[in-house]
Length: 369
Image (cartoon, rainbow, N blue to C red):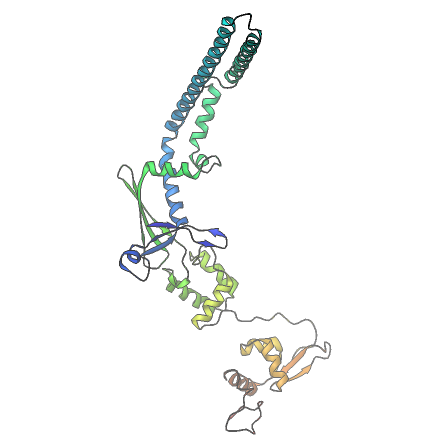
């Protein structure tokens, strides 16, 4: 598999894909394609787990490396001091070999000798400062610091000073290859790490997919959503149940949002949920025999209050105003009227506003054949 960096929303999201069938045999689709983040996270966790037992050895090697680096720096300083001493001796010899009669030459050589001596002195002072701040032998406190840092492999791995190149070199040193196998078009991915020594580590990953229908547990999740919707549970509460029961959204995350739940239930052809439970009416006049508060009547007919107001405006429901609260309506509907309203509820949308083509004299408000 190769790495691809498609750009989405100004962010580069690496992907692993196998396109050999497409490039070599003209296939219409790639063999496998998955987001690189899930594989990288799995490999990273396994690499850190493999490096943790070697923390003590790493700390000792790090201390030895620091000592070796300081020895190399000391060697460089020695070469610089030797070069400065040679330049000063050469300038001194040239000055003494010059004839006194050549005053201009003598003055020039004298200045060069003085410059060489000044440079030599400055280099000695810098070397003394370096020696004081960075002794060649590690102190006990420095060794303790190195040991503590080496024991925190994860901290070193995610440190800002650790580059991507450093991480890749570590992985390539201990990992031979990673074998990835996607289960069909689902979110399940089988990954196997083949270590440099030949041993293997297998694990199951979860990749993001495009649609809920690709999830391996989609049938079980649909049955559960139908059951909850049948119990009158709202979309927001339904969204909490799949999370608690281990169902996850297609593109990652922990919770399927209520909007997705509503869209899914609409696609499945079942109610998205919720049976309307009206709030109790404020204190005042109570409806009489065969009378209803509008919210109660809407709940009885399993329809919205807005549709109920539209029916009232068409004259299909008789209402009166409450004496104490004139802005509140009380509807009248006995058993026969309720049956008629339920039958009207089953009619297809638009039948109230269309004329039958063969009955031009029929009014839109009376669609009964």
